[in-house]
Length: 256
Ligand SMILES: NC(=O)c1ccc[n+]([C@@H]2O[C@H](COP(=O)([O-])OP(=O)(O)OC[C@H]3O[C@@H](n4cnc5c(N)ncnc54)[C@H](O)[C@@H]3O)[C@@H](O)[C@H]2O)c1
Image (cartoon, rainbow, N blue to C red; front, side, top):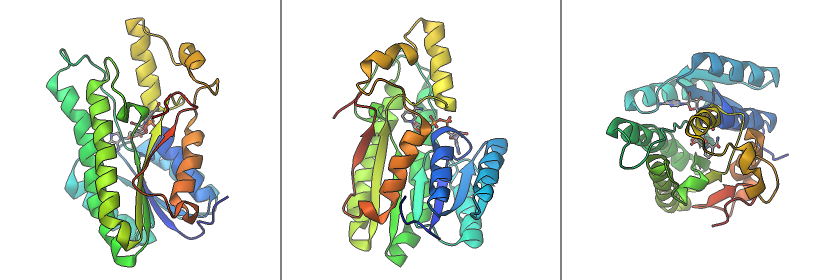
């Protein structure tokens, strides 16, 4: 366990999958957690689980691609819980398609959510961290933020961009006591995005996640809690000397 008692966390993409697991883990570690997502039912379920842990929570249904929505959400969460000590940008989407065939709208939508969304939320939240001289930001990239893959060109490009933003912001705010790191998960099941990818792989006759287990040195697929445990570490003072990193959590599947 990390000592995160009474810290305030803000998690986007908290209605399901990795974002939900991180929100719950941070609550278990003692945080009060603000939740943002477009999916209201899922957000409510996450909020109920946090309340059951005896922690405060507040949810705002908001689309991170719209700056005014982000500002509204952050204002509401700050008013209810206080300024954030921890920010997790987990909201993300995947639109699979070959580089030469993918409709531009699908390609660009991934940038609007994965890149612009992370940018807007950082701009809305990080200045208060700088002002109080403390903060930890965790951006969800991917192993595909370090390596391209057939049919995942737009997604990979957006996740490379997340690492670039993470490094730049880390350098800009390091002297103010704010750390910024990215997480690069491998194949993580039990998430909305993985279900979507699996359905597509089935329809195209591509190997399923289960069929790719033999390529994962740890011999199993990842679960959202595998990512959440590392996120809790990065959010904690135990990671005080880590910033600007893009940390692989892939069971050894991707090493660079
Ligand atoms: N599952 C994996 O294998 C995997 C691997 C590497 C990286 N990731 C990354 O982890 C993060 C979480 O993904 P997940 O696998 O848990 O998928 P998920 O679909 O379960 O979670 C993503 C969440 O983001 C929310 N969201 C989407 N667009 C939004 C928007 N415009 N505004 C606010 N919320 C929005 C969704 O409603 C959803 O709740 C993503 O950034 C994803 O790219 C996932």
